[in-house]
Figure (spheres, rainbow, N blue to C red):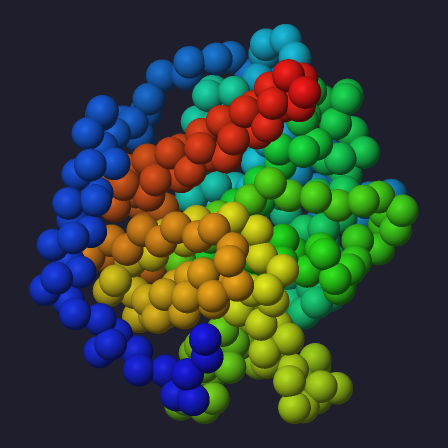
Amino acid sequence: MMHPRPQWLGKINFALTSTLFLFLGIMLCANGCPAHGAASKLRYKLFHRISYVHSADGIRNGELYVPDSAGSHPAVLLIHGGGWVDGSNHDHGVRFLAPRLAARGWVVFNINYRLVRQGGAFPKDVQDVKNALAWMIVHAKQYQINPRAIIPVGLSAAAQLTLMAAYTIKANRFPATQYPHVKLHVKAAVGFYAPTDSSFVKWLPRKSWAYKILFKYVGAWVKVHPRRGLLMASPVYYARDGVPTLLIQGLADRLVPAFQATEMAAALKKNGVPEQVVLIPNIGHAFMSFSDPARAVGYSALLKFLNQQNASDRKSASAAVVR
């Protein structure tokens, strides 16, 4: 599962992989990739600055999109990137996704969380994500959320938060401090260009931006846990307790190399956890924030996965009724 030293992108046969995943991108859009200004299929209500902690602190809040139709809906907990030190729920990537998913029948909670300078160093921000998840479960009836069909979706650094939050529920690591008695559950998880193995920082130049940012984020934790600290902040370390996962990654990403996705997928597969990986050739980091073909491919892959998970949820409910 883990390599003594990452082999980076040299491990990937680029000629074969590029051809294969270019074909995948075409197939994902075979029925028409959504235009970036696609019209809504459903109307939705938008609730601003909803705090998901008991005493509002001005940081831990979010925008809630609720489809304007009867009944409960599957839900997405949407989390912005920014290297754990920057960004907000107004970022282009999450602002692109939120209304489009709501227009297709998903409740979307697009949240802010504490950044490093706001007291959000690891594992506090993971706990913020779990608190937001707990809030959705507690308020499920009020906002027409199906509490058994919540899927966290994170971009970049927030993809690490997404996977960490989803994979540590079973073992009750890094609990939702604001809701200690709420039983957490996620249906699946999605990570766009996700950092999954923090231990790779050991092979980065110490003066590099990535090295400095990662140690701002996890440095205090590593001092307390010097032997396993980096791994304990890595989703790959918790693969045994993983949930069905979609990873979407650019093959030309220099910030989060593609091996982060392939290692994570291999770890999940080894532990019998369903996983899907979409690798997009010649694409770098943060492509969901830009209007280019890669964003359409990523969005289509996300929709396909969400619909698969929602269909399996409905199938399970029907089977329960039959019995």
